Length: 316
Image 1 (cartoon, rainbow, N blue to C red):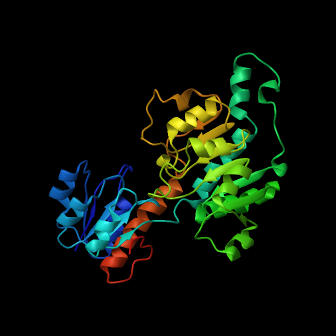
Image 2 (spheres, one colour):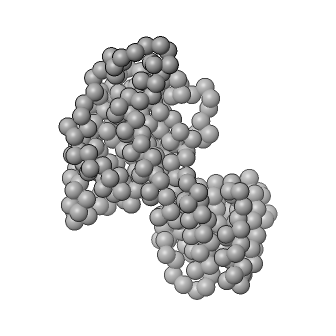
């Protein structure tokens, strides 16, 4: 049986090769860029490991004997889950490789925006001294942190941010009251989340329900002193609406690691706004996280090819 990596941007795939070949399976690593490449090169794969390649229904229909598709990372929006289900192929992710990294990145953005660090830096670099550019600031202990989603990463954010004495609220229809109580988090409706949050951090997958759900209407209903942070998926936010909300003072700032189109265009107005921090979809990154996601993806493929139930299946 053969494990095929469709694409990767890591320095090497030695970890995956050692795990797959150590289990007695054949290994192949490719750099497929198109649907045509995938169909031509992967049809005989027993397991696919995918980073950014788009696994369409047409690609899935071309797979003659595939038993599992594994996505490097948490999000699986580049895999047609319905098509995989129709063909009896489990799709798996790696949900636990970058919890520390992404939660810390979200917190770093919240902290930097709460203290106006980039604005202070710009002012002092321009020869202007003083705190007037940041007026008004509030103590974090007097503020409310909102979490859209309460899975592994936002749970870590909540646990860490409790040390600042903040009220923490979350909106997640799948979260249990018991889990929220353990974290000291108050479960609220979406309307309450957006109207009462001083800092609002997004941690949801990209689905038809979440795509574009942060839009002009939502921004108008948020506090004009609110800060929005997104380390989940870019299309959850309508960027044009966000730009207008930031320019018009409907919200106070944003920290973004993900975008509607990646890489972000150099002319994107978000890059010119003084109340925005942008990073290049790097919240997940440490050397430790890279090693974890690579090894865990290969281990999942080997696990399923060994006749076992998937550990982290995301489709029916």
